[in-house]
Image 1: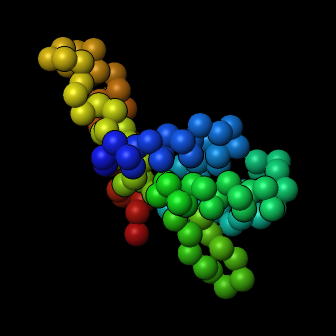
Image 2: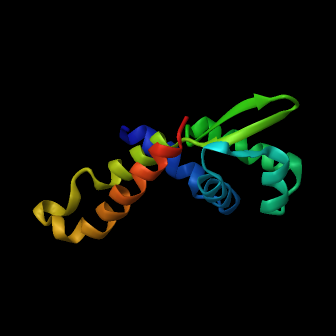
Length: 118
């Protein structure tokens, strides 16, 4: 991930509803959620959630696919991981012990998410 991509992703995440949606989709896993369910759980109108989903999709942090009459949204784990890697790239000026807690979280979660991906 380059700096421009990171700025777009952080811009998308800097809004409360979009951050809540990303967190819901991460929890939902690879099965994702339908737009209506996202709107209901986020307690926003369908038109409002549609606006936020478009922004998140434009940033590359989520993906969509049509299933019958529904559009299912999923977190883009590769992009989210890229964002974390971007932040950790120049970790701690040669003091890796400072970044160890964050690295442990990434190391712990990455294999579990890969198992769930189709």
